[in-house]
Length: 463
Image (tube, rainbow, N blue to C red; front, side):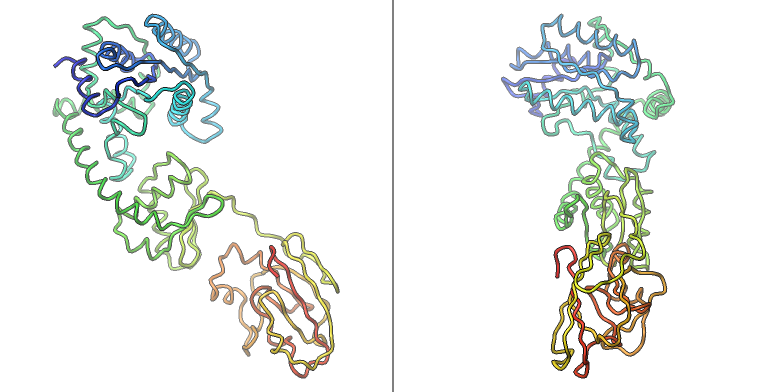
């Protein structure tokens, strides 16, 4: 079977292109995409579809990049095809985003193809990935340690992106090119083995071919098996992911005990899926998962680790949180002297109010809420507001012994990063109220109190 007949059959069997559809072909000018153009031109009348060409000039190789653009433009003119081009400074985008040139370039291409397809009514986006690309990706991911989830086949069709050459070896493509004397342009960077994929293509794959000339087909079949296994595991993963809680700023969280009960592979997939929500395209490695495992299984209730792309993974008691939200620095120490009437602490976002009246109605009978407290006015000295310091102690209402404020916070599972944002009301140097939680036993109003001071707080709208 010749290449043209084989690709036509694949398009029909896999339903890659329907009759009457328009296909935007991503064309670099290299051998794979140029041959794919010629093959599609041969069969487009029989299968009743139209073709347009899209090209992205990455501005990475100076005159060579301009040469590629003009070559692709000349092909479009030769075959009277619509031509869509973008010039993008990929090097600058990579520097700004922290991504590799290859990663940034891929993102730019797919974004341009997608936007062009929407704007001009293309139903499908065709790219020229080959069986050799699958093999190279497979080896690259093994080396990087992406785990089994990263070892699935590249899909021949995903959404509106199609890959007609995905089952075709590059040797067959080259044979077709030679038989039809098809010109193409060579990317000089493809010869540089400093790039991982080029090293695999130039150094590793030829050695594997000497051991077994059919190794590409063997890897292709193995990828099919792995893809089927992955599909089953993904179903289990989706069930767990569906229980994740999404925060207002894009962060996601799951109960720690739910995660640790999963088998290791499913847990890997759940975390990889959630990390992908935070950073689309991020494929976590086993090393990243090992970091998260230490957080999950650590004995301390508050643990944290940092991953690429400014992702933070933290455990706060029984919850694992994945976030890209910038951690706010601890707020300062002393805020303001407490005054009668209204006291505003802008740094904490809290407003205090106070009033005094004579005793006789009884302390506990007031039933204060978490943001309202009644004190024995005669026991109070000058009041001020500050936040938590290491070594702070107080005697919680109802207790006889002083306790460390840190232990008090831990007993209530208050996240560590929140502790320095909780207002503390002090009388001279003694904590008399952990606002929102508990007053000090020694300063409470009782039935014998002659002068009662009522203090209330409004924190973020709560009062």
